[in-house]
Image (tube, rainbow over all chains, first blue to last red; front, side, top):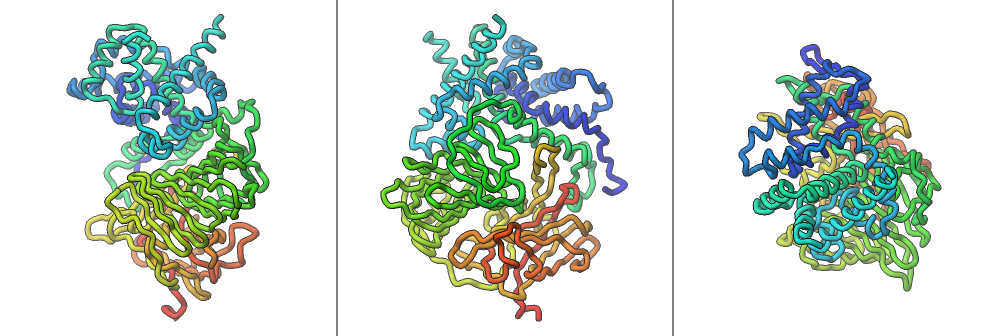
Length: 176
Length: 450
């Protein structure tokens, strides 16, 4: 690397933490923006700020909580710059959606989801694989299966609801 | 079901697909503002969607890449050094490991075997239908129905054998899913990249169906290769006949021996098979124009004012069998574009390469080959030697590599690729930090430089 380049000196642990946090940060932002491109945009800004503030982070403390706080500031700043028409949620709704639970529950959710996926019928798992593993669009899946886009969208929706209910049952059982 | 629930259901299905209209956005906002139950369902539903995305989909680090570039590379020449600090590589690599975390935790039953690995080289990942990655896939490893097989590195290929003695080879960075392969149904989805297949004729058995994002193939006994990209698929039939259906308008046509066809997502484009011209013994990359006509399948073409276009290597994460992975840079060319002559590698030929980086070590060059029957015939590689390099200017270099210097990637390969047909040409660096910038690649027969 040349001498006049000022590459970041981030610790390996820090980069690992940030990398691990990407999915959950995206989830946090997507839930509050309900638009993929906007969530991705704010995530990029968040990553930038997190890197610049790397020296503020104290190793051993809760990285996710720290990163989410930064993401939340970025989210609010981003919303201020947007005209209302571009945003899905009003400030009031956003406040109500924000329940501050995802940090703790996220890893638990993933564990339950893994078990619930195994309980799905093969055809359901196939469809989810096409949508998520293979990243195919609804249109591509519907063409391949010779079904309408609406049918595929509805089937995917039902699968997500089935998984959602399954996860909820497992959480309740665990708490009982 | 109450009305609000029905309405919420339809809105949720659209939120996660980014399909909400302005009116629907307003309706969702009103509903979540007024109804705590709707809010709870919304939260849970989006959580499930994002978790599926996080654990089933390939990791997307594009948001981090921008942070890397913006923070680590302030207002300087960007061309000669893709920036990718060690710490970043380490972190990204670790993420790949975490994405497939439940590998270790799984207690899932073993699914039904659909095929077996017969040959393997480079980095190959096999993800089972439940999301669990098979550790260290090797020759003899059974592959279950529903598994996704992915060749990660430019030097990778994997040959799968099936119970009907058919074989399929996934080559170049590519991935496919075996939907089902048994006596009742044979179905494969080629997600991207190149698949070579030799399908044994099985009278009375249902045809093998291969799905790509733009086409569907009905195959009986035949030898063919198919390459699929987001906007098109290209099929070449070396033996037998394949029925090809274009998904965009459901038109079908038969592609016979020694014919090829290009299937795009545009219904206005031509959909007729053609017979390529006779084989030639020279080839030169063409970077003028858009990416697809240039033949670059990995990497992207860039042009700066006053300079000829060049290809920038794409960064690819290479998992390291349970240890931390590393990022490498890769460029791949499809040599025989649609309608082009096949390129034969004559004895005494040279591979000429011009690049734009001052690094002189840590590069591999690859050739993917096929034999006269059209079947995949292995990958050949050579590690760059410093004394082959001729400096063109301050940053550029030129290499002339004798074809005989390339070695086979697996035991079944020939001693050298001489006499085989060239399918793909690739370059990869050990380290993404080194980067690769390619100006030109060519196959030059001995008669042209002696």
